[in-house]
Length: 155
Image (cartoon, rainbow, N blue to C red):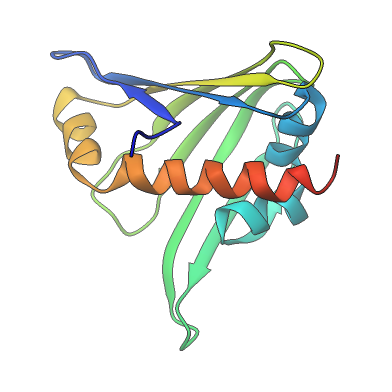
């Protein structure tokens, strides 16, 4: 089955471009990225902090059924333009991966459809390739499928 979330990684570059079209109005897609209650649902993680504004910060964590934290990530929001773009850093704690820079762009296609483009820049080609070797694409596609399903209920 083809993944709806597309990941383009050009050889020899330290970046990837992720695109996904949603059957959601632009405002609802953007809301899914900035409202903690919605983010928690589609990402399947706890939102410890999400300051959706310029110079805001964010922190997410996921625990296993025994309550042990298995994933924690954080960053700073550098640019925030409602319904248009978010520029932020992304750092996974307790991993060898250095901070990465993410440019999220939200685009209206029609009254009821929208597109998300995420341009991610890694410190090196090697780190980018290490990330791509993980089940990254499948996980992101599953999360975006949940986003579509959950936010559909808000229409």
